[in-house]
Length: 408
Image 1 (spheres, rainbow, N blue to C red):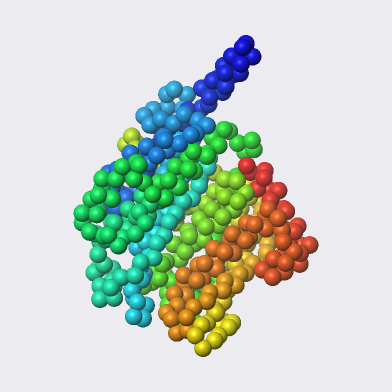
Image 2: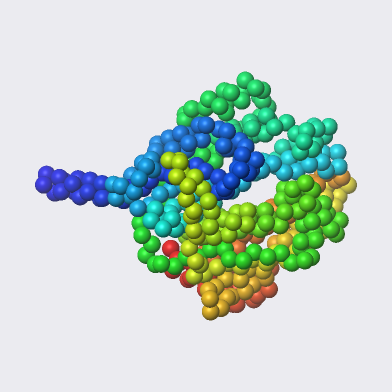
């Protein structure tokens, strides 16, 4: 009995000895009068604070979490959910009206003293919608329906086939914790519940450094060589280079950090760089600063290509090629590799093709497979997708894996 009692006491001590963490809330990663324009639905959804916190508190965690009010009670760290994008992009393509609703954020663990970011985990959802071509413009698009689609993504509602003002009130304005589906709130909650808030074993950080686009790739993304301007990264029909660079950064971070269980740092979206302004749930305004990187991924977007690889009387198979260069290393030097991917898309002949959706799929597939090589380098993948032989590729990926392990 003494042994059992000692084990119980020891277990209780471990639980109570965990460092308490403050909940900073949900906030846009921006400052000033443009917030309501940039985040119209996020800022108008009053339940955003309580739903996030309630769901996080309903999950098992290795640390106690409480609302942020002060630095008292031994709390030295805080968690905040910072939204960097709430955006609808798209328009008319031929006879089709296509919109994409994008929500992206990052779960940030930071030091209360100094406001320095310790970990940042990107989360994001996007959904495509087909609308009536008659109202296919930014001015005529149904903004009330936009709000319902925002709730679909955030709360995990599966369809808007029941869309009505009554349904908006029921499923968006008055939703309860038990009604949540598999949306961003649950994705955020699961990340928070699995955070390792203990001090880093090493004081090293890895993440995304420079992201650049060649002139040729920029031309294609902007509507040259027979393509339209990338519809989901364009504003007023003009390609937004920063938006696309943010997307590439966040997707590579998510792919690599998820597969290797290593926190990676990505620049704040919107060209904010290494610092971001936010208002915490207790009303305090803070400026968060990203740490300097010891090791970084530098990404160069080199170009895109589309070609028909197979054809029958009824069907076509297209290959969507994406071409990048990925450098990795520190101040002294970097290892470099060209990487490419051919994403095959099969369709009924003469059907409308959303080329940029498939190019995005090609880049996403490339990021996932690149991360896989860091775990186990494949003999066939390296010569097919890089400019290296297997021996050199194995050395390249092993070097990256070693440095990322040192940043855990």
